[in-house]
Length: 393
Image (cartoon, rainbow, N blue to C red; front, side, top):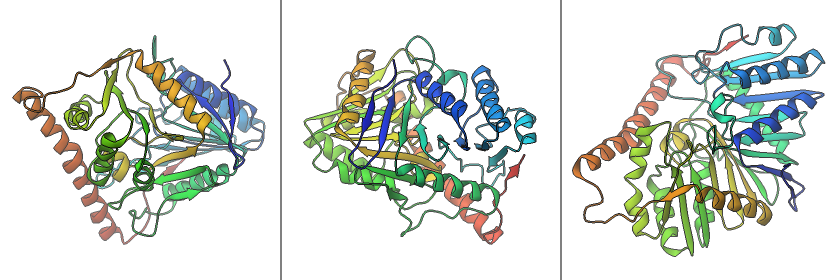
């Protein structure tokens, strides 16, 4: 069934795609109908039947005169044959690889998932182009999805893509500093949140902290959940004050160590009033936050890597109708989830599990972040801000 069209007062048109299969099919259809330009930025693109469908659609678009530009993360696409996009390149398509492997820069990845077609319609979500994302999240494929959107924000998405393309091809990025907010307001109801490496609080953290103040109904679906610092404090404070605060996490995870670290937080959030569920049928990979009538959707998780190390992108949309759809999807997923029993504060788990959880948390909140910051500072000192390593085909 085709998703309902939602219009916002600030002239945006949004469609909610509640499975990876629906979102990828909508992207493919948009590519096949493109007449002028295609901008495609993804973290993972795997040689596979779904990868071939996208590649062939890009190639056919280039053949009919559409300007096709692909920006793919080098590490996320390891294993992709060097000649995979040869025909596209011969037809004038541009393929850029973000941050080819260098030991000083390997931690910093382009984790964004964006498609912009004809500068008029954009797609943002959590799905990569690989077989595991091409399912319904129940009988096959991971649980994921995203949105398509038309309106003023598309112009800003085009600018964000073109800026990222320059980072890949001509210069080294600079860490996020004060004054570079990454919070782009495209209208009264829609904002674009751009996350980049850096120690300062990201646009997503600032927006969330503001929206959590006074929140009454919070529903978070998150693949990787490990908030720290002020964001963690804001979430815990809202747990105590909101009428409903529900968290949906993976029961099956593609990163078991992150799941171990996340579970170390369960007791603290439960004691503050949160209800926690784990999705059972398949791996849960979605990143959706619903706070009253506000929906956040995109590529970022609530963990240190997304908030401080990766390049990420999220949309913040104020729309009661979209929030209703997103919350309906959340309720549907709860019927396929297990409620996590409330943990005792005295002895939530045995000592061995507590030890593993503590080590996992230290790995993600301390070691991973510290190494990334060290490598960034070392590279900037040695390079003098010169070229960001990239290749083009």
